[in-house]
Length: 152
Image 1 (tube, rainbow, N blue to C red):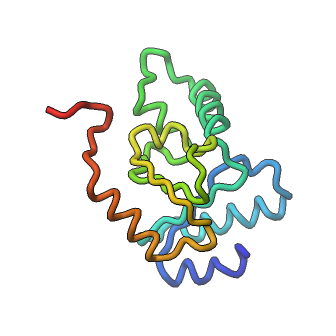
Image 2: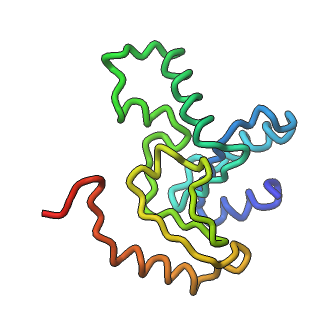
């Protein structure tokens, strides 16, 4: 699938980022994923993020390990520095859409969804179309985003 889609992604100026523990995939898949990300890294349009063998807890532990390896001192470690070691490197999620009637985040982007707006729908993912996306965006547009604060 990756081989087939890389040319199309490049044509449409899409950048690709694959997050997760790729070490469990066959070497040829790891190599192909790395090459695809490098090929598309200078694109400036949308960024397609594929979570493959990803878990939020894994991401947090991996970030801790990398910060230690890099010699980040305890007094230098803050939320912004730590977030730069996570898979999304400090980017956050504004709206998390959970399909299929499930009402949990299931170990997905635990750090990045701290202040996300959550939208739950009973619609199954294969049936989630533009109409369903419009409903989610409409709901999001009516939210009072306080990022952990309170109304004045």
